[in-house]
Length: 91
Image (cartoon, rainbow, N blue to C red; front, top):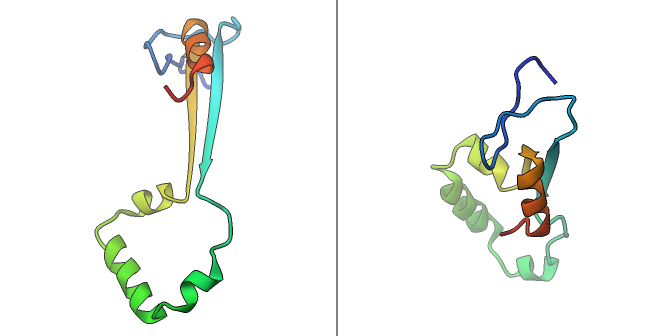
């Protein structure tokens, strides 16, 4: 860690490295890695499908496009917030 002290991402408490009273949570989200159903694409006009997808993505930023495929977050949580979060991380 750098000289900058982290803050809890939930409550804002300033955290002190070396005390052992906070958690670093790494979250990695990856879009569905399953191969597509080839039979589903066989009936499509591929040129038209590519154009449709390009049009759909036209106004999206590079970051928005990347976030649809892969996203990695690092959160710092104080002990109290971690205990609450770990019991119900989605909610």
